[in-house]
Image 1 (cartoon, rainbow, N blue to C red):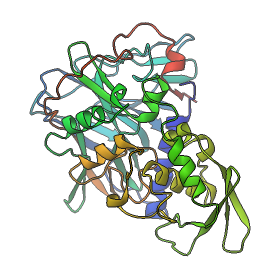
Image 2: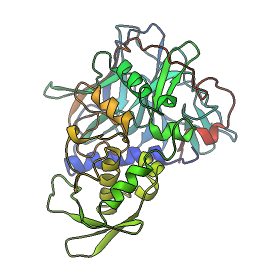
Image 3: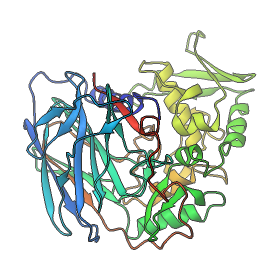
Image 4: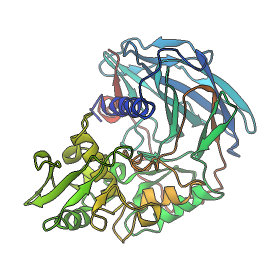
Length: 425
């Protein structure tokens, strides 16, 4: 992708959401300056594991990497075309072992983990290009890898697994606070990886989302938006449902109550032509959304772009979550319903449905705003003492019927336009 700010914006949103959840960030820092993060390998796989801690110093805005000891180093500018970034990998644990990383305060970013091969990152004069294995020609498309996302600051640690782009390496995330209590999420049920893969394969038209290596290893299942981007999924798949949901409010109001802790804040939507217009309690129009495309829904962007404000953004988040979960046409107060009500009907986000169904606690980041109604696989502690990523069993997924053309090779490609790029600032 050419957008340099998309993932950085997501991380900023995570920080903003986290800050809002705990109120005013305390002046006194809590938690250690270097937070131990223990990566445990219970995957059952024999390949070497390689780890990376990449992110942004949220005080300066500079992008860089963190070594195992916890030292943050800004990236040096690269070239155009992009030049290979230095190898900043950290040796991960063997099967049954644990490697301890140290995460410094005021970093927001990702912990990558790859099996067998090291990941390839690239630098431009003003940015870092990260792996985008859903894109043809990406240098990492044949590598089995995944990541977790985190923010660590004076208000504590937020750590989550993510399936927003793809489902690949099963792993849980944990945090242990000063009280000694450990919180855990993101753990798959026994056989859960196979169940997701086979469930997606069993949905008519969804099989192209599964990307495999020539040796039969299933590398990842792409989220529907990514699969559509590479031509492996119907780009208009959700259009009939979107039309149905939009038309449901031509003769009645949709009530949006975006803040769980402020139920008195309500906005009222009514469809007129192609637009859904929202008014506040005084009858003043406060937002208007054109009917989104399938791509807008998958990305929670475009017509559903959610600015970081207190009105339009919260309404957009709510609409996007309801469209992913196919509740918008059936439940006229949103957010509405619960997990038993989500993903009903033949046309729905079967990918997110299957990922959630196969989590021990039902929590996952199946799409960008899966945190609406707290369905996300996130752990937080305001006074953390340690954190963890547990690589869990793959369960021996059967080889895919055919190797995806997007994963079949890792030839040159225009990395600048294929990968996630971050500004060095």
